[in-house]
Length: 268
Image (cartoon, rainbow, N blue to C red; front, side, top):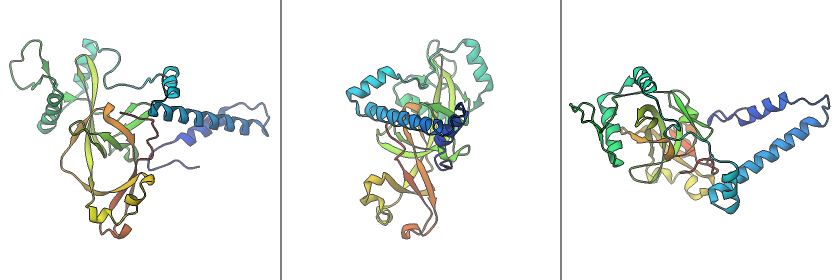
């Protein structure tokens, strides 16, 4: 089967590659089907265990012990050496004033006493927010790749918890910033939130009366404001389909977004 282009998941192709590498000892009649069955059973088992983890059941608790989460956290497990910090800052690019103010406000909103680097002299022993950051095109968390929109569209759309309001929102990744803070490399994600359709237009779509589709429709227009989150705020990737003007009788281009990719794989 072909890859799922819109959500950039290649699990089927990876499985085909693994099957092709299995040595069958020339027993072509039995081995391929046997291996496929075993891999399918394992996939179903892993899916079941992840669902149980999300539900917090006893089986899920046991699964968490047997398969501890080794995903990368917001902060790296190992502290950065002074030479590594210097290397990162040398390769980092300066943030413009608006971006820097946005990040500084976000850090202060968490109750952390970060200071503006432009306020001289710097007091000894206080936290000074660096004026520059690495700008990778993607980062990995819990075996999932998240990318900037201008890098990979399918990996840039996501559902997340807004740290300011606590509400679940959807949007796409505009920028990824990484910088050394308190001896660790920390990742920040700049999000453009999806713009919701007016209720009158949303009512023309079938999704409000079929909630099991786990889908909705948003505008292709973008908000002019940004939102900063961190990796632990991310809930799941989204499947996004751009639909032309006239779809569902709506006189504008729309995006159909589906949240069904979240099967307990990523949780807040």
